[in-house]
Image (cartoon, rainbow, N blue to C red; front, side):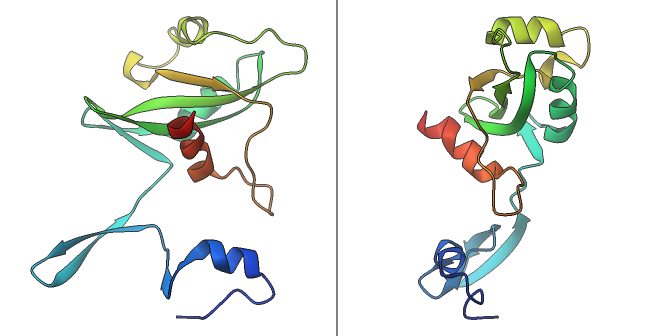
Amino acid sequence: MFREYYGRAADTAASFEGDWLRTGDVGIAERSCVRIMGRRSVATIKSGGCKLSALKTESLLLENPAIAECAVVGAPDETSGEVVAAVVVARGGAIVLSLDELRDWCRERPSPYKLPRRLEVVGTLPRNAMGRVMKPAVAAMLISG
């Protein structure tokens, strides 16, 4: 494919594992073959057999006056596969909501299974050089924290 990102050694190091480019695709090894299952999406949360849109939940949460920014991802869950998890940045001077308060505020809006089941409040969201929120880093925050 290619050897490196021109003039971007840090991006190259983060994107390769040995000689392998980490594309984000998911594969399954079967009988001396690899079947490509597709890209693991951070925009879709697979919870209890339902596919939920992280973007729709983010749009809903941004209507809350206490939330300045948010990222919604699927957090691993033994029972459901993934659960809706929200990482939020509080609006300046706003009182930070608890998970129960946020769920009560949301309850009048979407179906209950789309509501966040985990909430983390952070000072800033991780962003790449282009200023976009790095959803894999957000998901890693939930696993490590």
